[in-house]
Image 1 (tube, rainbow, N blue to C red):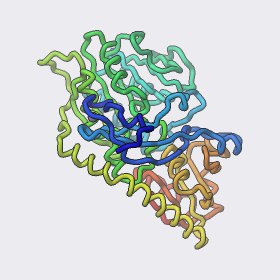
Image 2: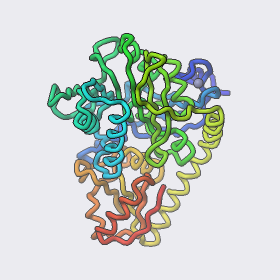
Image 3: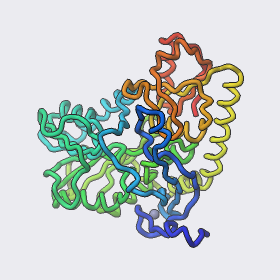
Length: 400
Ligand SMILES: [Zn+2]
């Protein structure tokens, strides 16, 4: 049982609305701004931290940070969570554009992208399909207003009215950031005002995140969804779940939904397997083992880096995205790694939050010649191996 002071433990589940959330892992204080990099080292190490206290619903396996404080996290145009510098992610996005356009026949329709980032995906989707588009993201730093049939807002999507008459919405890697995910979904459906609409939502898959070390358990991610809890929250909010599945080596989960669809509707959405109770039970088992696994991984990597450093292997981390930042916070507070490199030129020469690691271009590895390269994202292993070969580096790639 929880202590009386921990009132957040009595929060009702956002997804099913039926059970109370039960705490299962306390990760302590972690960086709030894991996607931000600083010009000054001092600013980086002084940047904010917040507590990550995970709780789960025993009924639907929904997971949430019950210590989350929305006021700590201000989304603005200085944040850079762009995944588009990776060729693997670009290829995956391009294939998704083709698939959505083929199945939903988007030409002439209006597509909203909620949490559009810097707009790459929406631009490609509208370009390929001939749809009109409206993108919303408080982190969007590009030109606002209409450009070639696509309109960008450097702001959150409006609630309670104000959305255009949309036919289709996409939201990729944003839904897990929202403090009130259930209310968001109800509002989005209500703003369709009875029109038939469809949607595609993509989140990190909690099955992957919570069955592994948990490097993707980061402060901006308030919610952690597996198939069952994701279908549950959409269903409770009045959406019809068309299909769900995993993508990108099982790291991402998508869900396709509709609202106000006539029963005999002839659209081309595929119908995948809907999540089973067996899937939920598997997730509940992963949740039960998470805390022990997470703490064991932290210790293991701290020891591994120390050993590689002592052996003269000059271990480095490749990838200064949110997973990388979380890895550094949990496993390299001592700055025993010889370098941190990233493909994104906007990060070069800048410093990562809390730990203060500097990000260098991958080309620095040609001089450093590390014998071990740690990566936190197995999906990029092949791509990084090829880059290392091009840089003339012979190193063992270790997947954390
Ligand atoms: Zn629940």
